[in-house]
Image (cartoon, rainbow, N blue to C red; front, top):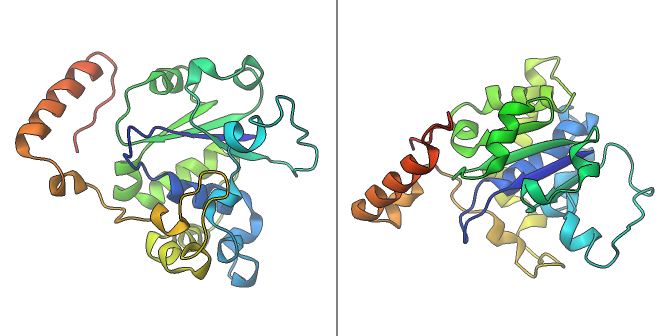
Length: 221
């Protein structure tokens, strides 16, 4: 099982939709091939490819039957690490965590158990997409054999392609009610400059510097 967790402070977007497209594409053998007819992203929004644990599974039933889902099962969650059940922490389940503002225990746990938790930063994904994609694929036990496979996955899951797919321009998430088209924004690093003054930036930099002190985690974007 693969559990995908993201941090979203307020409406801070952290690349979650991007990763919700990438992970199923990596795990699906057809995702690396040139046959676009079998590309699930053409027919389903990334949210539909990765069900939410707390919203879609456990909200209605505390003991959902997952036997109908083929292995490996892929889910997403916003549950903090300390609140995850021990059955998840102690199982073979792998956790992928992505953030733009990393201030919680997933970072510390990923340094203790790198085979269990992969900690990704959106800025690193944008700066070195091929390197981070290879890192993610190896962590998931699906390493790439050819360079062409890396290129294919990156093209399939590129923001521009996802934004322009017909399936993502209409409809809404049946559980949350958000229109699918609103899940795709600029996808750029440093967009804070359009919404934040230098004074606000300096205050936030000061706070994050104190929060990160001694953690070994840097955040210099």
